[in-house]
Image 1 (cartoon, one colour):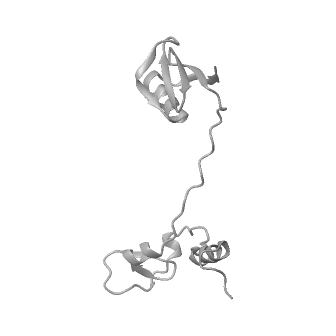
Image 2 (cartoon, helix red, strand yellow):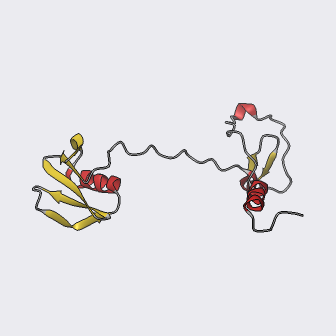
Image 3 (tube, helix red, strand yellow):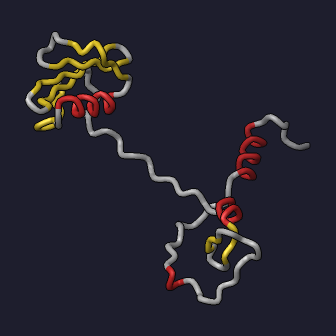
Amino acid sequence: MTAPAYSLAAWRKYQEQQEPPKHESAVKWTLAGIPADAEMDEGIVLGCWNGERFVSWEKWLAAAPVMVDPAPPSSALSEAAAYRATCGSTPVWLRKDSDRWLMFAGTQKSRRKDFASPFLEHAIRTAEARYGPAAGGWQVE
């Protein structure tokens, strides 16, 4: 008897079958590495080198592996509820209020009513864009 169609084993087998082939890292081709008498598909307007011959751009694009950059490094900031920095000559505070970051500039009571962000990195970039780079970095408040 075979495994049920909706079992975990059947799902894993299906995933393995659907997994795309693993490509090696992209080869850096130079003009010197392409032979002068290389073959070329007939009737192409824009040709791309695929490592063996010139093929149409559409064919090359369909067969070219997609390279993905690795995930960006996680933020070096700790998980805190408030941060402080002096951006330019303005003291700036970022405080977490439930699921958003609020910005206070000048004093701790002068909240920027035009700003709230769900992401700390976005709040930091916005503060530094408005007031200048953080001298000495951001400190946990």
